[in-house]
Length: 557
Image (cartoon, rainbow, N blue to C red; front, side):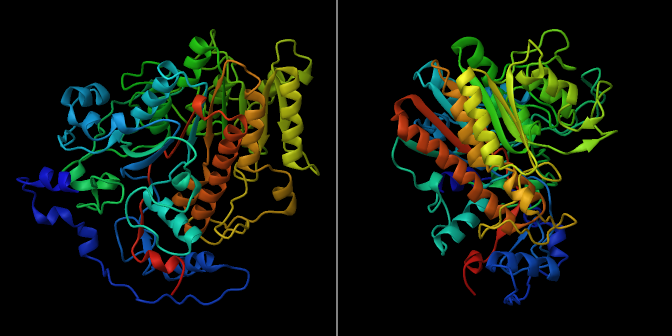
């Protein structure tokens, strides 16, 4: 904290800029006590969520820059986000090692020196350091098993909310925290840090078929610690800064494609683009690197659609994150709009959702879109399926199957792929393309939020889909047959979807389901006694804007 005070000394900023005009115009004092009446079939967090939506305000918290309204913001933010490291250290990239203390290094990252971004007292690293950590772990430390676990949209405040419910109390108000597995695990070398997620620049209109931007980027990235805070738990000095509306530092906040590219390719990208630097030059991902230089296998697992931005960033290249079928083609080693004649080898394992999502005319796709499933064309599915008769096929395919346990379908497919030394493609999900949302009390009964209508699940939805942890276990079962080693991304994507919807109940439940996937990884490493050879990074791609004003109300009146 002293470093922050030193940094602020001598800086003169008009006081009016530190309070949003929207806040000044609004009554920020809300009822001191929620009408949290017991509701049949709901738990405490579900009731808090339901009441906050009904009353449009909540004394315990809110989303966005207006305390008087529960739903003031449903998008991402420029908050610093946590990084938990196991089997390694993040210290080289923090404090004295921060790229934000070096003007030339910042300029190399962003293509220019963003306003108010150089900070000679910076404590934080950059999201591209997560890529560098992975490379160093393999190239210098000889790690053979590298896991990148991305809780999409999980900032420090989201983690704190989940921890409060787990602990039954407010156990911390700053720092690493306690109560969740990835906060408390101590059976190996571990470390904690936090990073800037800001992009190269904001999204612009693209031409998918030509793979180019139609307009120049005008809103650029950067991070002003004076306004956003020196730590993830800092209260912002300018509440509008974190959502790109500051009158002092007009920095863009990231989307998932840009931030995931930072972690998988080590460069700042334009929002909406995947594995292209700020000049739209294609860059090699860490998965492609380990296949090429280490002869490792690589995989991606997600609780949301298989080619949504974060899992797609593990392997795909495109100016548009919305060109889903082409992104899947890249991930599976098929010709795509960005690799028409020379596709990459493809990931050895791809498991995720999107099953049943049919469309005829989707936005974001190019001329090669095939009507049918939004995320994978039927002809592409046949081309990769070992049981289709195609001699070039490489994948055992597991799909959601009516009347069959999703866990069993996937487990049998993984065993089949492992015994045949082949690849694995798993395709599951419910309506809207994701796994069923788990809520804070462990059931699958989401309550009202900003997305209509409220999702409900049939018994078949619950039985015919595996959990994210089971997907992770299946991926490892196939990848571990590679004696050289492997790299695996696991995405808990439903954290982001819950936070977009301003749903504290689903957000906490999503953290818990992602935590179970982390446990699957830790359990496998322990069984193999392989911490010496392993690196696990648990982090997020960006934050949202949850504010816990009275966090104790998550557990008691």
